[in-house]
Image (tube, rainbow, N blue to C red):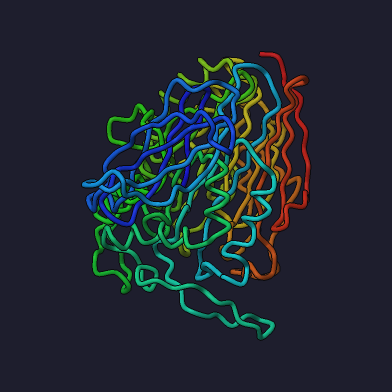
Amino acid sequence: MQSGDVRTRKAVLWSRADRPSRLIAELSLDPSFRKAVTVPGPVVTPRTDLTGELDLARLAPGTEYHFRIRAVDLHDPRRSSEPVAGRFRTASERAVDLSFLWSGDIAGQGWGVNPDFGGFRIADAMRARNADFFLCSGDNVYADGPVTESVVLPDGSTWKNLVIEEKAKVAETLDEYRGQYKYNLLADNWRAFLAETPQVTQWDDHEVTNNWYPGEILDDDRYTVSDVDTLARRARQAFHEYVPVAKISPDPEGRLYRVINYGPLLDVFVLDMRTHKDPNSDGTETVPDGGLLGERQTRWLLRELKKSKATWKIIANDLPVGLIVPDGDAAQEGVGQGDPGAPRGRELDLAPVLSFLKREGIRNHVWLTADVHYTAAHHYSPDRAAFTDFDPFWEFVSGPLNAGAFGPNVLDPTFGPKAEFVAAPPAPNTSPAEGFQFFGEVSIDGKTRELTVDLRDIDGKSLFTKSLTPEPR
């Protein structure tokens, strides 16, 4: 049971059956399902790995809905599965309190579903926040990260993973990519969290393979398929089969960028910084080539930002703005490359966006990301920058969720970042058992419109808090 891209009057529900059948949903305003409304759903078949979505419309704004889905036999409607229940809240059309979580990097580096932790230990803390939705900043699965039954930890204890066939090797076939999502849903507490918390989801690299870019040819002995475009096509199909995403992206080639309008206080701009990427180089090019957002996505982003009337604009960037993320000894995976001067490489795609925000007087934009497997708060200011044509802004980093912890990374000076807070592990690939797992929470006060960010640890404890007062446009 999952829901996704919930807005004021629309939502997407998702479920999977164990055989060909028709999905039937019931909607109610209370958990007893009195006066429930029945919504017929799709027939699910092996063509979509028995998964299906139901697009809901004409919902009431600012309302908590309880839903349950059952699978009905195609030949005998009297035979059906037991219903499985979930819930979601639609966005309000009024300025009311709201909160959401964000993080990413789920079950990577060989740290899988551990029954001793109830699946993913951090899911319990996230579920306890009772948030309006969860923004996943990418790396929903680690298709390039097989798991083994056990891993010996530094203290001599043993980490135990559940293992299925599809997670015993890197994913190459469509069924193996599907298996990555099925694997994560083996975690009981993660399933419970997703049933109660709508998702807004983007993807990054590990849904396909590490640090990939279009046109890449792999040099990796683990793979029999070296054409990354072939792998990405299969991975994209599995992603859309297993993640509830509304069909609202304007991209004609099916990219994931879109805007989620969440009432008068909040618009969420979901970027796709992966499928426009140019090859990973040293990042010192001096001519912009659209190798980060692409021209079409950039035009869309600027148009939607200018059109937005929401107090706060959350920009969900699956690659951090200023952190240097190497790809080997010489190439760069991310935006920055360490050159302290004027924008170069992929920075050339980002600089015009920042200048546009300043020129159009679009303030109150906050950038949220994951990717680097630790948590941090970065403040960007032209007073410290080589490129100065922008207004100051904040970027917050969170993650991972039941994956190896790393960091911290070095900040590229071009846009004048300063790390105001960092929490990172003592060694690379620190296991989730040691606690260096993080998620963030954003809360917006309905009366004051103040936005507060809390960076939280594996148990939900706030490690850092930053409150921002909205500026007039």
